[in-house]
Length: 289
Figure (tube, one colour):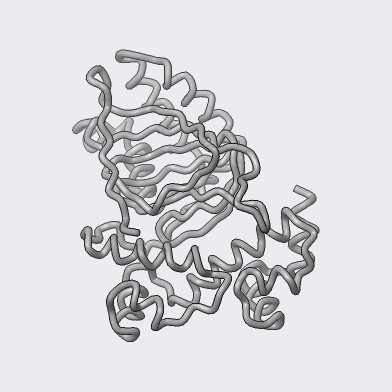
């Protein structure tokens, strides 16, 4: 599946888009667009992929995605089932940087917003207290018209620029300047890995999806993501293992193999290295939150 360039067309009386998502699951393909996107998840859970970052999301998740940054939200499936738990609901704002005009570069009062949009090229996730307040303003934005609509967008961006607890998502090495051929190549790789992580994945198989030799693909992938392929595959597998630890009573050995790890010892080693604790400790702590 190729990376999809989305075409976003505002209504005739607006310079940006605000819309709601309400469907059984988040299941879009990897995609990108020149618009900056602010998305708040009202209901749903799964993994979000922003550039080369893989993180779980739940209801209350708020992320600002920069222009051209590849991303996708994917809902969890019930273990052993194709049925989704709950619905997928979100509110989304999409706008071009250009609608803010020359003031963004010239007005000192907007310096914080300018810096925010620069940081958003990596994607920014916000803590729940901030997200809740922004969600209320996004709801108001969806029904506001005229100059008040633009004014409220600036207020939202201003509030986000004042947040010091936003977490950058994609690595600084991840390229948002890929041409369509490069974007399609990486989309095929990402989709192949996320659909097959529970099985053995060889470098040769992944390189074939990108129509490259294994050695050339290794260099290419590291250049655009700043990561080795094996590191990215382990991140996908760890994300699934963490979900199973949080949401099920499945024993560690079983979920280790279901997540694609070849041995329990290797799983425990990688888990401790990435999470700083043993899987059982992660399960206990995640249920205290």
